[in-house]
Structure formats: C-alpha cells, structure tokens
Amino acid sequence: NAEYMGDPSRISAMQTLFRSARLPVRSFATAAPQNRFLKKISEGPVICAEGYLFELERRGFVQIGPFVPEVVLNDPQAVKQLHREFARAGSDIIEAFTYYGNRNKMRLIGKEHLLEPLNVRALELAKEVAAQEGDLLVAGNVCNTTTYVHKDAASARESQAMFDEQVRWAADAKVDLVIGETFDYVDEALLALRAIKSAGLPAVITFAIHRDGKSRCGLSAAQACKVLKDAGADVVGLNCARGPETLLPLLKEVRALVPGPIAALPVGYRTTHEHPTFQSLSPADLKYQDLDPHTCTRFDIAKFTRDAVEIGVSYLGVCCGGAPHHIRAMAEALGRRPTSSQFSADLSKHFVFGNAQGLKDQAVDQWLKAKNEL
Image 1 (cartoon, one colour):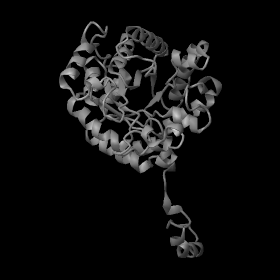
Image 2 (cartoon, rainbow, N blue to C red; image 1 turned 180 degrees about the horizontal axis):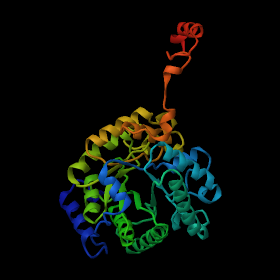
Image 3 (cartoon, one colour; image 1 turned 90 degrees about the vertical axis):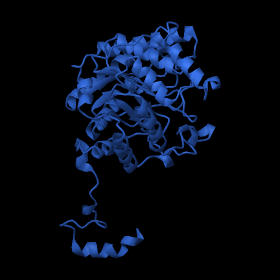
Image 4 (tube, helix red, strand yellow; image 1 turned 180 degrees about the vertical axis):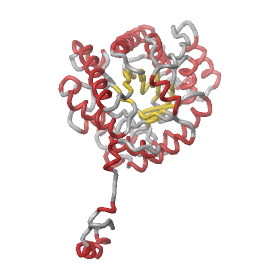
C-alpha cells in the first residue's frame, strides 16, 4: 500500500474508488432519531467500555494469539462480571463480547460449529447485565476480520458474509447500535457499515491507525473517517493501537475534517512519539505479554478524557488494556458519580497519610514520624 502514501492524487483516486460501483457500497441514511443511542449521544458525551479481550486475558479466560472470545461459552459468568464492573464504573453502553467472534476466527480454533451459539450467548449476557444495571444501552460488535485482502473481490464477499451474519444476530437481539471497530482498511469498514445499515441500526465505526499514521490503504485517519461519515456512519473515530498521547493529535485532525459525533477509544497503555502504538512497545516474541509497565494510570485516562471532550469528542472509551478503574476515571472526569465512585480514593482515612476524625492520635503521631520513609 506504499503506492498511496503521501500522494494526494492517489488518495483522491482511492476515495473515488470507494464511492464507485466497483465496491458495491452506497451512502446509507442514518438511523431514525428515536433510537435510544442516537438520542443519548445528542444530549452529551457517551461512554462505551471496551477492552474485554485484554482484561479477560489478564483474568485467565482468553488466550493471547488467537484472541477468540471462547469465554462467552466456557465461563459466561466471567463475562457477566466484567460487564457489571464496567457498568458500575460508568459505561453507558454494554458491548456484547463478540470481538473476534467471527467465522474465520472460530474456524482457526476448530470451533466454527459454535459460531452462532457464541454470538447469541454474548448478546444475551450483555442484555441481561444492561437490564440489571439500570436499562443501559446494548451494542452488537463486529471488527476487522484479519483475513480481508485489499481490492480482492472474493475476500470482500467473504468479509461481507461474516459481517452480515453477526449483524443479523445482533439485530435479532434488538440491540441499540452496532459497533464496527479496529479497521485497518477503509473498504473493509465500508462492508461492515453496509451490514449494519442494511439492518436499520446506528453504526459506530472506528479505525486503528498504526505507526505511519495512515490506514492500510493510504488515507489519513481523518480522510478514512470522512469516507465512512459520508457513507452514513452515525459516529466515526479511532480506537485501539494508540494510547492517549499519540491518539489525541490524530483526533484533532478528524475533528477538523468530520462533522458530527467523534469516537475516541485509546488503548490503556502509554504510547509515545518514539513508540506510537502499543504493539511497538514490545519485541516480536513478547507482543501483548510485557505491557504491564506501560499501563496508563487513572490520571492519564482522566486527562485524556478532558482533552478529548475539549476538542469535541462525544463518544469515549478505553480499548485494549482498559480496566474498570479507567472507565470510572473517565466518568469522573466528565463530572459523573457512577456506582463505583463510592469507592474512589479517600486518603483522608489512611492510617499514615490521612487526617480524618476518628484516626487514633497516638497511632497517627507514631506513623507521621515514619511517613517519609514509606
């Protein structure tokens, strides 16, 4: 795809190609305004917790490498528990854990026969928790297939079929929206959008932008988002790959070019100018396994939230590496007090660092002397 890099005429040609009949993608009307999700995002920022794959891997339920959400069938209570934690932390949307739950991924691990049961069960779990936690919104989910081949008609048909079946199950579950995420290729994202809009549902479409700052087909992050917005996506933006520091500059470019709601879901890792993606933080033989020292603090996520809202982002979350305390920090940065805020830090009651009434004076005096040694 290097042929498209930095050449405006080629980029323009690519944009024209996406709109042409050669790729059977038309511009779709946005979903009806009475939809619960569209109403909510019209009223202010919306939080959608992602990060299920990595958080459940840390808890021992997902395998690094294939990254298939078998836990949905193997241990559904683990999925429900994480849904609950994200809800208590302030997520407005419960996203069904069907990321990488597509036909090719299930075939990879020899369990293609479980494709529909996995998707249906994931949607059921999300709906159960959403109802229990206060009638939260529910999202279906599709993502990059990992097998899509750019400009290959057979591959496009295969990817379209995968999107169509996952979106059909989501529509049958009466979700409020479908998220299409982590796309590298604009034309693959358009196929996902086609499936979602054909089902009459709101679409949130987000791209993963890697080290060179462009989509795999050569468009900038902003141009990629503009193509999807013009094709009828209700919300467009960026997720995964980049942490707060290296995602924010691209978001500013997206905001400058694209009208309407913008999505921002960085990974929960401290990426830098030298290492702009979380994959680039690790050597090849340790990918995804040695990221703990790079984990964002809750303060990193709170700052990102304020910065993102300041530039006009209204759909927020944290992707790979994100955990419930990150989502709570995001909600609190928006001035909210989700359920789990009752357990936000209160050092005033700490036996060394606190000064709350009720701490024993003699013990406090003793520890104050040792305070600087801790």
